[in-house]
Length: 185
Image 1 (cartoon, rainbow, N blue to C red):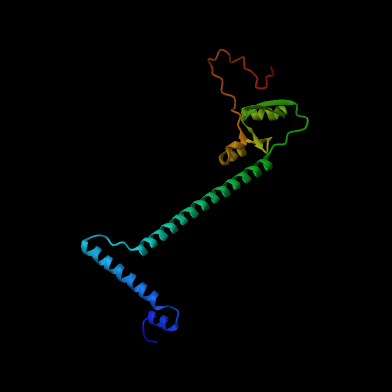
Image 2 (cartoon, one colour):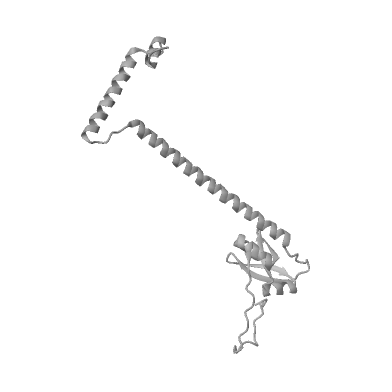
């Protein structure tokens, strides 16, 4: 088969002569405009190049959008993992409070005073900072201080810390008159 693609398409009947002449004429006009622009020092505007640049820009924007979406998904996955770890640590290491616990321990949670029934030994542990209060599904549990630190590193909203009693100053005139932590008014 000799001849150009245009001639072959015309012979096969897939293209007509009017369309072929029109396309040739448009190509000649583009070449003339480009030649005149180069001679006059103007920049040549190539529509195909502009379209290619627009497509490249779209692809880059799509890649950036996909990257941001993947990053958001990863952050969400990590947050769920941390939440699951905290829940598991609280449920595994919670200190069982006996049913005969009679002392009420008051503490502040979300600007509200909450109560927890404890035994005297558990209350002393909480006061000294050896145990902390953990919140899980609107229920309160006692956990050891070591576990509370680990949970607090991951998700501080799960742990309610009670500051241990401060050291008594030697020259404090009211050192002999300490107010008990469980004082009921």
